[in-house]
Length: 250
Length: 250
Image (cartoon, rainbow over all chains, first blue to last red; front, top):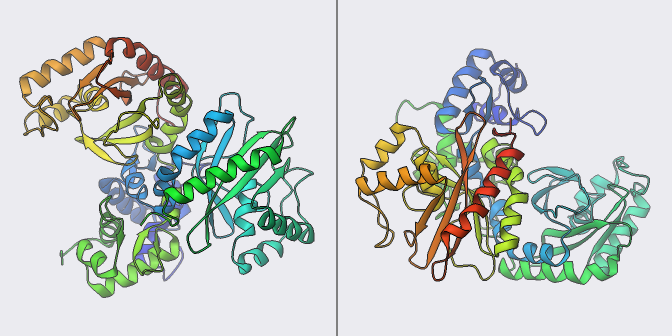
């Protein structure tokens, strides 16, 4: 038991118990992960089920409920952004039949807000609603290049995971990469996440110059011409910024 | 103030305050809508912001946070269903360039889980994460036709909103419509939501015969051939059911 926590934080801890790896939990798993007693977990879970934040299946396990997803769909950086971006993502997909991704920065990581994948597109590791490191993917490099200095220093100062042998993990080289992203107006991640793919990403910029999100195309590395894809991705990013009215949905 | 409410329900009431029509709220709006004091709202909102369930903008207003959207993306009937269905929805979209919709029943209404719209497709009223009545749309008629008897009786016993002059609002005629949906294996909603559109929908059925969701094509009424579109939608629905392993994601 964690002492002195507010009830609000205990309710949120119940939601925190669910992860992509364990989206369905028994009551005792829920209690253990949330750090509360079985009796308290039982009472709180029942209230969350009644509201629709959790659902309980025929197997007795708890899952995240559709009602929570409905409320969460009001997040400006979730579906709000996604709805404005969708026509441009569809266009990118239609002309390339490749992976199209939309992501925002959340603290020291990125969250994928949308992903469209052709049946024959190169496999990627991403999942809508999933998190990823900032230093490796195309969208991540864009978001990191335009993040506040404090965020950049925190990431540059910590050990960086090498997803492949091409992942840039040295802080000097990563600083140079980020400078190039700002200079060029787009990022290229060549084999830095999976060896057979290359990602080209561009920033979606607000009226005040803030980078709100990033959009990318992820294609097979073999035969890819990142410089030719960049204008396509940059044009989509500008279209999305315009559709957003150069700010996130209010 | 509502007396004797649990803290959990007060936390959830703060989330309930946000709606599609008012996705950004001041502290006093939040307190009033949640039925709690300004001081309590201030303390709870701060905790929700710290966790990421809410975000506070430069304008001082509160909005739903990306962290809540991340957790909510674990809902089996939200993004889990959507991810399995997406390749089939893309296929439907590619061959028709029309509106493609995916919905589930939530109580006496439906919730749109996904929507893909061609730039030149007929305008529709739907929004991902949005709710709609069951008795008018194609997906709604499919979900209602296969809902538990209790749900059907509750809807048939209440006054039904006429979106257009073609909306079926009489209980006898609606019963006949629902029987036809079950017999045919698909639903056609002709001008029942907007006069210029027709929707053709089919059920996504689980291994136990339960209807898990519904998929539809919404096209311009003029020149539409619902009977020709039905096999296309039904095939997509069967593909999605197979991709789901004939049950919702666990």
